[in-house]
Length: 420
Ligand SMILES: *[C@@H]1O[C@H](CO)[C@@H](O)[C@H](O)[C@H]1NC(C)=O
Ligand SMILES: *[C@@H]1O[C@H](CO)[C@@H](O)[C@H](O)[C@H]1NC(C)=O
Image (tube, rainbow, N blue to C red; front, top):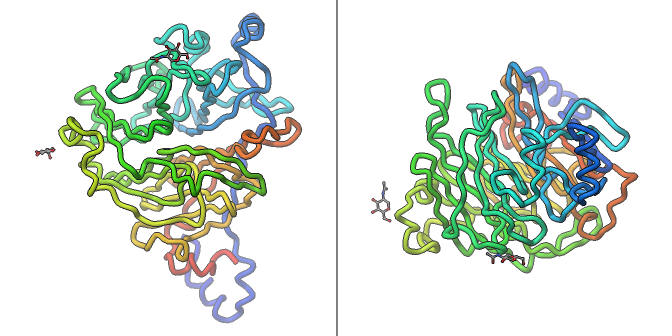
């Protein structure tokens, strides 16, 4: 905590001195004009080109997940969903090798997991986002969809990041999704047996179904899944047209972003300015949903409204909820002890050019045990309108340490004292 007594004294004596107070800025970790796909061999690359499974410069990296492990160091994972064909793989690590368009991606865990393109449902078809656990596990939600077509049932895969091998697979059944209609895009994991005592064997994974407006709950102990639906998971047409950095597009996405404080699931549709919550124990009791996916309506509550729509959200260990609003672009932070409304919306200073449509956010505990906010920004407004230019930087991974704002009183933060 760097705002200490000497600083406060200084403020009291010379108000203009606050201008010199250093705030934390967003730091760009990676940036791309277009994605750069690496292949294990030149022959693999040629075959992918010839078959149409690789169209150079295609794809957008919508998911990000940094991970640190002593032997492998820090690795950053990204996901490239197959909105169309021509994307050679959907889950990748970002390498240190730089090309003019940006750092080279490598398929994860290896190319052999990706080169089936829907013809082999034991492989990975298309992934929007992943979630990591404290036990070096990666939870992958594979939609099974390329373009608009359901090639494979959606599946949940758990990889051990120490060995980079698959440790568990669960294929979702049609009681929790509707083929060619559902799209399982965002997982959030709650671990009931965390380290050092536990081994992360008891998990609940909550997954947003963005197009069929629902939530899928996976329980690792029962190795089964069920579905919950609520009117709050639907898009609101009043918030279906979005403006980012002066460009507008319509996207009527429903259930989109999830976060948790281990007691509640927080969520919002993309086409919405509202944030909602539901207790985890209500979701976790399968009996509640056995006869009616739309039950327990009185357990869902509106927390409040933002100044405008936002995409991905995440929560830190202090239960601060982060989301980047579209218009204007603001990195916002909400603490559950405060009212959730537009007037009290807290803005964390951040260069808006670096966070045009943040499609994924993660809180990452670094080597020093400090939490960092990681975001991936994709300028979706340009993708939607077809104005993406290959000569500009379009995709960015940015991060920001949270230590300055996590501990500062919210009174200070709202008055911008520490940042001006
Ligand atoms: C999904 O769509 C594809 C292509 O339109 C079709 O061939 C397939 O039968 C559909 N699957 C189901 C389960 O409806
Ligand atoms: C689960 O919910 C059912 C009602 O839907 C209730 O009877 C049961 O006691 C609940 N179980 C637990 C463990 O809370």
